[in-house]
Length: 208
Length: 208
DNA sequence: AAAGGTTTTCCAACGGTGTTCGAAAGCTGT
DNA sequence: ACAGCTTTCGAACACCGTTGGAAAACCTTT
Image (cartoon, each protein chain N blue to C red):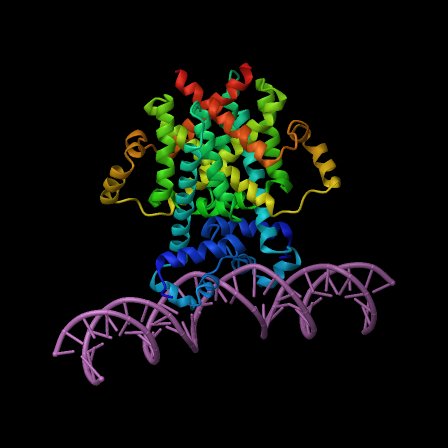
């Protein structure tokens, strides 16, 4: 079949889901399409451009998933619920690919319409919640920065070996607070708490 | 001079500061030491290990800089000032190298003693501020995740071309809220506001 | 000082990467 | 059937991380 920008992005996403961000190569993408690597460059300027297009697609999917999640919310849902729904859907979208957060983090958001629509919707819910105009931008920015930072850490620690008991004891001796005060929560719980904490911050903006 | 793990990390940091994260190669590091690329592998298992060691060094430097900044604080400094001091010194440490946030984000924190000491100190100031034990871990985690996420975005947008007036108008039409509500602040101001917002969240944890 | 053993460095090579470029192939309209 | 344009090929370039055996350097022992 004919080679197309869209089909190249599709193939890119497919191999991305299989081999992850670091191992993704133009040759693999081309092979999946039954083409040679050089042929991709007729439709795509460089690998970086392809990555940016893929990042945009991830954001688009996250946007659609978020819309569905928002629609499924019960009628009496608070603005905290709406924010949490958007945060978790974006996180899920990133977690579907190994290194997905890196894809988003490494390509500039400002020219990705997908990323911008995520931002726009978040701003909308913040405004509806009553956040004054001069603080909404900061709040949305903080939320999104935190989100990518969180999933980034989550995914980078996912591909490391679990710590042995021996080094754990050593760490405990050197950093007493670190391990006594940070219970071993699973990532889902950590994420929920983190989002709740940020919602608290937003709440202070609303009250004045 | 003799080749050493420490000297290799030094050379790695030097070339890192020059060419950035993406372009850093073992051959360049070796050349800076007057050695051949293969020789590095006697002291370092892989490039990933070298990157992890470098990430640890960045954290150590950020820790030391943070200690100095904390010591220079006036006697009547609040815990918000102490948090802001730590946040800004870490950001500065990351900004000194192009792609510095990627270095930190892409190597797992959990076995880097430098990263752990940053976390430990942050937990300490939170505890001193009166944050109850069951929330201090979440708060520290949220702060650090946000910080790496913020600098990541900052640095990824730094190596992109500035938007032209034409596409700016187009974006304005498609995402009305995005640009009317988000004044064009410089990154320093955005960062300060972001940290302040997070401090507000921490404050709610203290009051109960 | 000579010998032996260990630690460290070299050097060439392997398979892989992003990217380029002229030639070939395919398609379209006349 | 011919011309013209679009798309693909296929080889090449320079670079990458990594490996393994040969060579050098160093240190200890005799």
